[in-house]
Length: 290
Image 1 (cartoon, one colour):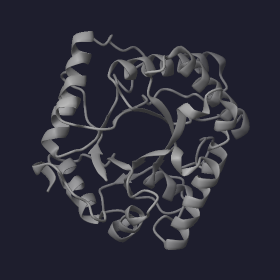
Image 2 (cartoon, rainbow, N blue to C red):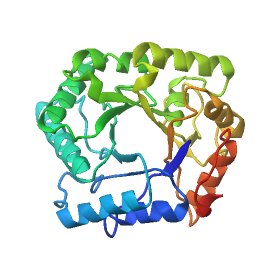
Image 3 (tube, rainbow, N blue to C red):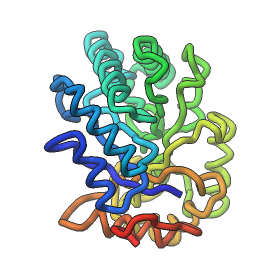
Image 4 (cartoon, rainbow, N blue to C red):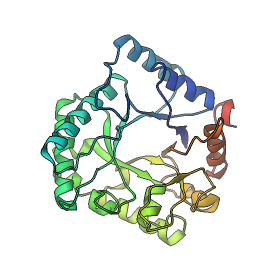
């Protein structure tokens, strides 16, 4: 397994891979700009080259970019959908400049227009962004959500229908978030529930499409549809539930990215140590989290 966390790119892009190395990460995730703003400063080519060189030097892989919070590719409002598509495409271009392997995006909210219509708009957004991007663009990974309300993507089988709608399904995959899945009702903390979850993923996406795991504990109960991340082993999944999940043969060789809270200094290091202790045959290759 390869372990990493979500990191800041401030004050310079290369700060993320350098910090990843300090923490003892094998992989890492970033935003490619301000996640709460539509406008982003252009990426300086020299800074992008420094970032890629730091990644190569530290032997970090894969490099994962997460979409900004504002993007809603399932939105039925024409202006907002167009704005989301434009931001999606721009972020995919930025991710390409950074040499990213994967770009993860939340499916969004249909705002009462229905899940089927929301999925169609999501597929159209994926087509538009990938159509603009070149062959070097990262694979787009759809992330499962906690579901509830007008959120799209809580039902993995439903989310998988996007593969039948897009022009290039080979460029689209899945990121599975443990906290979201549990809150959506997937009982990955039990052997039968975990087997059923993998059956759903296998039947909808195919295990070859499962490329990244967001490994997070959760303060929310199963089926509550609440997105409440918690420190590893401190939530409802707990050490036993996460140990069972990480022992599953289908995820044993997946890159594991933590999106756990940072409430105080050292939380990333503590969560990395915790998840590595739970993973079978885990080997930390750096000193920072042994």
